[in-house]
Length: 238
Image 1: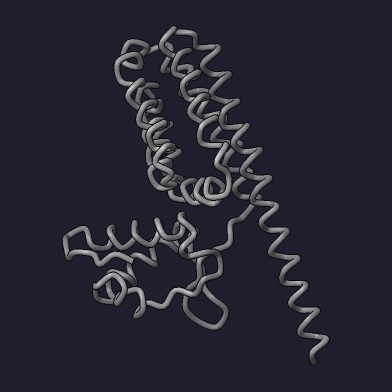
Image 2: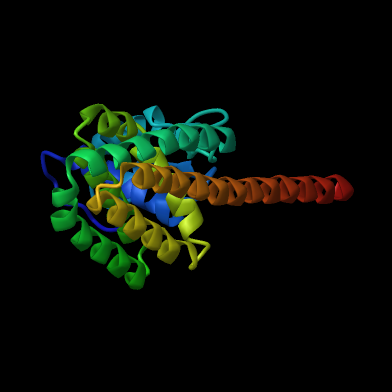
């Protein structure tokens, strides 16, 4: 863990540091979070750590531990499925409206975002890949001309980052295909083809949802099986 410098944005810094470690898998699900240990690791007092943990709990990323304290929340597969169903519709709408209202802007500002995304994949950094993905989709929402799309999705970006991190860490093939799909969406927007842009945008999120939900379900099932095996071994010893 990196030592953080004191600043007016200290709580946000601690929040982002904790979230990054959750995304990268350094703090896996069910890890107990000890405020004193975190404060020492980050070189800060307990207060910003406490406030950052409260924000993470409000966002569903950590939860109350049995007894007392907090743990990293396991991912809720059903919530992820529902979230991506809603996001797919919004993504398609954003792509359609961007094609209708801002094809020239897309032609100017979109290609550098695609290049940045492919560079992030080459870097091998999950954090950079997620940041590039967020930048591309945020641009689509802005180009749509409807601020409510961006505001609606923004409420869940913290959780979406967690989901993407959980999956991207385990699959080297997904990131490249994601940016091929981004490029196709951008091409449709630049061409002013709203129908095609909407279809590709919706399909892109639906495909990601199928992959992510299946992967998360597999992780969940494996965890349940592991717990059952441990219970059987403990029962035999007793």
